[in-house]
Length: 108
Image (cartoon, one colour):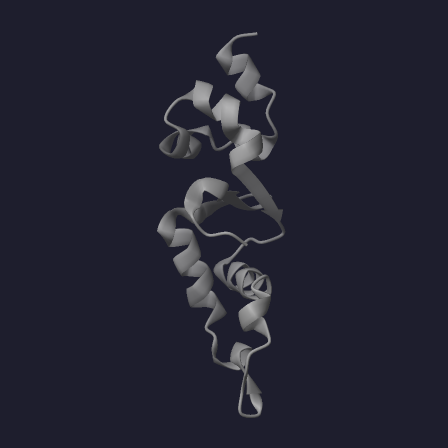
């Protein structure tokens, strides 16, 4: 099987976004070699708000912080948090959700 045929066999969220993924992996061969270990799909996260909420809720050390009578979550701009995560190269939106590059530096 040649490289193009192998790409076509990948999940649609990968095969439909090869051009963008080449910006991360450099070559199709590297994409084929590393996509399983270096990419994570968060299904159903399709906008900055949802991404911000997901990131916040997966940091338990800050999620439950209380300031007076209020929780920290009442002060967080989830839209801006999600936008910044996406803009800083941690991943991008695909039809199926948010595709995160694990090597992007933010672990959640």
